[in-house]
Each structure stands twice: as structure tokens, then as C-alpha cells.
Amino acid sequence: MSDRIVVQRPTRIEVDLDRLAGNLRAIRDHVRVPVMGIVKANAYGHGLVPVARHLVRSGVDQLGVAFLEEGIALRRAGIRVPILVLGGIFGPQIAEFIDHDLEITVSSLDKLRQVEAAAEAKGRKAVAHLKIDTGMERVGVHSYSCAAFIEAAVASRWCEIKGVYSHLACSDDPASPMTARQVERFAEACAHFDRLGAPMPLRHLANSGGVLHFPETWLDMVRPGILLYGVAPDPTARMTVPVAPVLSLKSQVVYFKVVKAGNTVSYGATWSSDHDCRVVTIPIGYGDGYSRALSSRGEVLIRGRRYPIVGRVCMDQFMVNIERDTAYNEDEVVLIGEQGGERISVDSVAATIGTIAYEVLTGLNERIPRLYIGG
Ligand SMILES: *Cc1c(COP(=O)(O)O)cnc(C)c1O
Image (cartoon, rainbow, N blue to C red; front, top):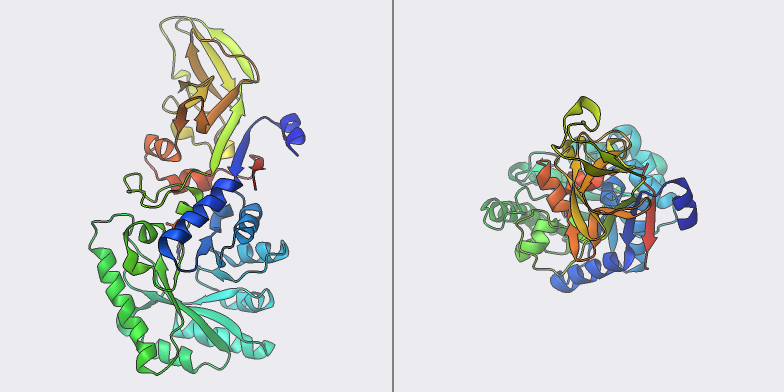
């Protein structure tokens, strides 16, 4: 596998499976409730199936994805643990959920009726988690008007109500009063089960921010995504859980040259130097999801030192100024990760281009080969 990748192309994402398992263990030790590992968006760019497989091997209780097709891909790969699809559903998809044994997010009375009709037509119960909106205003029945919804769900013959959940809008900020309000609204919604004398389903509320900062959100299960991958939901987060970054992005020098004083580098001729300098070319670009916004702003590591990207990032390549230093063709280049004593974090890349780590990670696309190490 690694031989083939080197022949194809020296650019790769390295995914450290031992760190992934270590992060799961650290989260579990911290919260001491079951963990639903969130693997949507190609497992935050780390590779859906290999990551899910290793999480299962490492004892994750359940998986969560955003869309039906992600759940089907996991089932086709032979993954057997419970899988919740977090996104809103479309009526025609419901039969597929049932066929693939995927748990459904039911987010309105109307959708509950659709799920019941599809389940009855199949003669097989659907497994549902009820989605309550406590302040995100995305998907879910408002907590202040969910009584009839919960009553109908509890009475349903064709829906097994396995869970009830909500999503936190501000949990990455430990000082935000929003989370306490959402916790309270969620508790009010859950109280309807008691009022109806119905068994309480699994209550879950905590994303990574909840896991890090708000023990009152842990309840019966937690749903960490980015924290599993060793990255904070916000760069200022206090890392109360000892996790380590799982992903590295690496390439190799493909070309070396001297650029003469005053000559410009790359499209648009936006960069030049007032003296001769050594410039190397790296074979990865925005066509791989390495943002063009890093043009003349990003940095990479070569031979344990930090160097600037110069000129515009192209679709498949970009240039790096090493001044008077030495680098050779095939030298390793680290775009995200560690080399020597130096490190480039996902957070620093995100900060450079004014976005969040989530977007940098999920932007790294299928053109980059993934290499799984450890495990
Ligand atoms: C994406 C998502 C999560 C995980 O969020 P992180 O901030 O990555 O931990 C949890 N729950 C729901 C409903 C989500 O959509």
C-alpha cells in the first residue's frame, strides 16, 4: 500500500490509529458514560471506514454520521454497531434506513408519521432518536412545544424510541450562559417522559465542547467529533481531556530552483524577493483541499524548520521560499503535523485563513491518499 502511494504521488494524510484509540479512551475515562463517535464528513477528513473500524475495535459504543449515505457506507463495510444518522430525513429515504438498520433522527410530528408509515409497510420497527431544539434553531421540535410530539412518539407502535437528544450551540465557550439554558430546556423536554409514565430513552446532548467544559451535559451518552481527532472545538479551549492530534498532512519536495531577485513566483506574479533565493515546489494544492487562502501566508516544515509559502497556491502545487538553506528533491514536507521539534497545528492553519479547524480538516479531499499507521 505505502509503496503504491509513493509511486503514485508523495502527498499523503497520515492517520495515527493508536492516537485515535487513545483519544477515545481519554474521553471515556473523563465522562464515564457511553460514547457515540461522530464520523460524519469522511470522519472529519480522516477516512470514514478505516476510522469507524478502528473506533469499533477500540470499543466505541455507537457511531454517528450526518447523512443516510454515510451510514450505508459503514454498513456496506461490515460495521455492526448502532449508527445514528444525525441529519434531517426525507420521506423517500426512510425505507433505506430500516433496510440498513440505521437509527433515524425524528425531528417533527410529521416526520414521525412518515417513519411509522414506512415501518408499518415493511412490517419492521424503526429505531428513532427524537430531536429536540433547545436553541440551535436548526432541526428539531422546540422544547417549549414538544409535549404532543413526545406523547405521539411514546404511543407509537412502529417506532422504537431509543434516544432523545439536542445539540449545543455555544459549548466551545465555557463562559457562555447559552449552555445552561439549553440544559434546562432539554431537562424540561425529557420530563414529558416521566409525566407520561414512559421509560426514559437515552438522553444525549454533549458535543466536544460539552465533553470538555460542561459535565451537566454528559447525561446517558456523549457525541464527540473533533475531540476524538485530537483537536479542540475552539483554539482557546482548555484541554481538560488529554487528547493528541491524529492527522498529519505531508508531501515531498518535487522541484528545486533559484529564483533571481525581482522575478515573480506563481499565478498573478504577486510575490518576489529583492535578492536571489532558493524556492522549492510542493505537489499539493487547492485541488486537494489545501486552501488557496494560504497563498503567501501559510507555512510548512522542511528539515525541521519553518518556511513560508510564497505566491499563490495553485490547484496542484505551491512554492516555498527556503532562502539560503538547503533542501533536496524528495525531502519530507509537513503541512500539518510535527517534524523535528517543530509543529504546525490544524488550529494555526485555520487561524491563518480565518476559519475553524473543522473546515480545514473536512476540506482535505479524496484526492489525497490516506495512510493508516499503528493500530
Ligand atoms: C457534528 C455533531 C456533533 C459533533 O460535534 P463536535 O463539535 O465535532 O464534537 C455532535 N452532535 C451533532 C448533532 C452533530 O451534528
